Length: 121
Image (cartoon, rainbow, N blue to C red):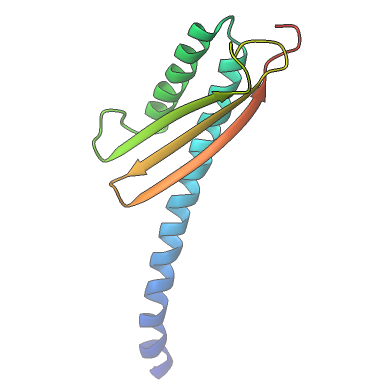
């Protein structure tokens, strides 16, 4: 009986931490998937203009499918794309896609994905 009275209050913070960790881990996994798919769409495009548009659409549609509301003031996803050289769609060019998600101003999750443009592009 005494063990239960002492142990239960000690486990409550542990359960809260585990729930928060799970939420953070899920957010990172979904963002990592979005970044990877956005990078793949980018390097598969025919030119830079199309590539930037397609990458943005992949993030917007993917975020919506994963349950993130793009119009919500609580959650924002920022897309940054960096290329080793310009134009981006040139053979063997390295493309870095970074996604940053801000949730309610409390937490920030950042992930990145790297893809290479085909040597035959």
